Length: 283
Image 1 (cartoon, one colour):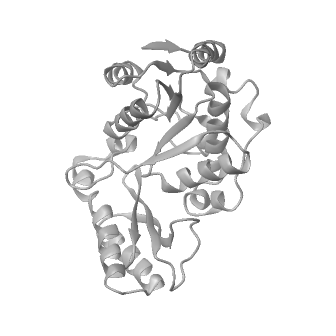
Image 2 (image 1 turned 135 degrees about the vertical axis):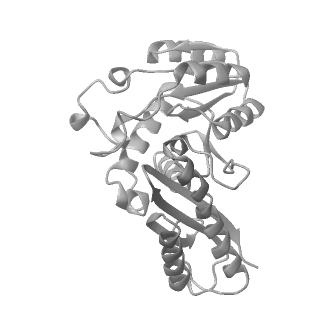
Image 3 (image 1 turned 180 degrees about the vertical axis):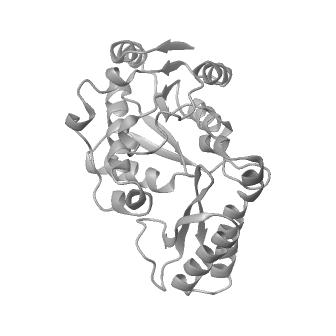
């Protein structure tokens, strides 16, 4: 595995592979890698001849008072993990390499509609930061395929929409959420949890399962299910941000005829903001 920090070096390597007719995959990350990230790399390895992984903690997607400065940075450990799963190139740009101008003057990419819902409502500007950095990484690495985890379901939809709207010749692959044995979704921010909070955290996924089971049994009172879930999460020690049952294809409110649904949730537990979702198909 080679490690590069500049766009010029990244493009030099990728252009060489392309000259050889190689198919290139990209896995964008912010580092502090866990098994979910490594699964993305393993899948990329099976879908392409060469795999590029980026590690960049993107300031553009953090709001005022969020954890940009304290976000865990574990580059040495991450590099060892990536080398062990077949990564060909690790791209680790600096902030100035990614953004040559001050953040306030930076050209941004925005996906209207989707970006203002749920996490976008709670974190204004977050998805503009995500779309911008991902679009830049796509331009820099020019992959044939890019892989993302489905735990960040709304983020995945924003990226899919951006690729479609901008006619980018990139296949977007989403992979199922990787979970701990007790159901907690793997996340870089799980490290913020205390031992006591860690014992509570799996209740978020259990609540998603509970709502999914109710829907499968024919309880289609969406508003009541959402309200009940918020109350239950609060009683278990969370500070719920949102809990929503939506159409899987576009996050619109479902009608009686809709069968492909996603249940999305975000809740604070101590310092950690946990997000999760379940996709279901009603019979």
